Image 1 (tube, rainbow, N blue to C red):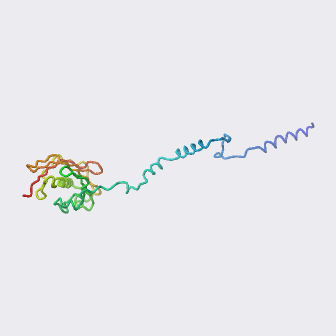
Image 2: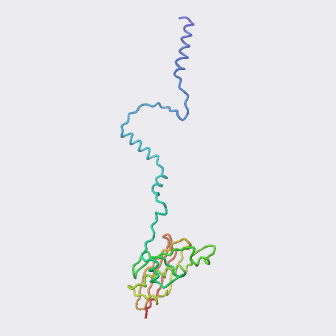
Image 3: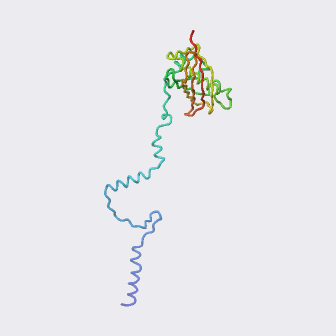
Length: 227
């Protein structure tokens, strides 16, 4: 073989095969150091892989949002009405501005009652207590609780008289937290001791806002008769 023929053959081997099989440049995102190979998967494996992928991709935020799809205005039920304001006015002698019970939500005649007072900025005591920080006066919380006690005692089952029923005394009263405009005061009054001979009833009272005690104490009620 002549030297020219050998040189031409060597040049062809160097240029043609390598240039025809040179890989095209790829970006870093599409680069895969492991070549793809056909893999046979059963339908069950494919379904499981797809399900696992969807589960792993779901974020905790999406799970919480699905649980809280109900609007906030629809999540909290209203207080029940056992005795409405018109029936309260038939039992208690108090009138504006001293009727401090809006609704009775639980009632056991002669035993206990739970009632609510909706505290609003339109209450007549807020302009003076206090102009810059509206707080319900403690004495009015005690008065409201005493009125709930009156709803317990002023019933035919107990024998209390509306005309001669008085708030006789308080003891161990504590104010735990301030009550402000916008709060709902929930008051529970429970009869502890009743002495019909002397016309004295001792009651335990607790007032709550949002499930926390804001006021508590012991109350004495004087029950006369209509004679």
